[in-house]
Length: 103
Image 1 (cartoon, rainbow, N blue to C red):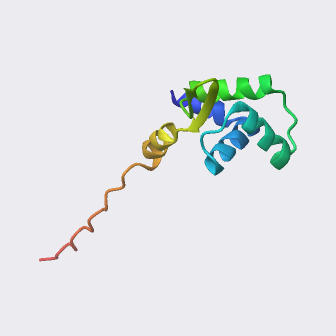
Image 2 (spheres, one colour):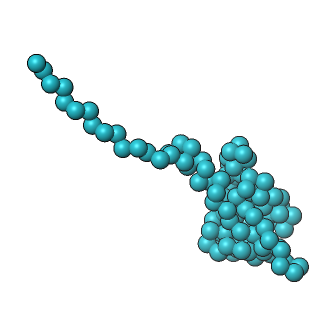
Image 3 (cartoon, rainbow, N blue to C red):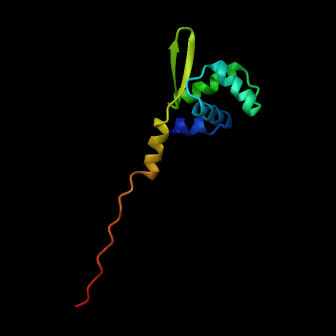
């Protein structure tokens, strides 16, 4: 699973999509495409953005929900939290060793 997350984060376009979902969650494909063009100057086709979203969804970073004929994309940070706790995990405070006494 972590490999999918790293693969998804390796592409700058996918990171921009995640940035846009962070800024405003629950966007349609059309809205994401519009934001990529206006904010980042990325003129990608809807099919290209859809493929990027599929990679993000496979990695668990994006979840989708349907309401009528609309499909909304939501950011899911759980895979990132798993990676962070893997390496930065809960740190236990180290208790200082008592000074050694000399007899």
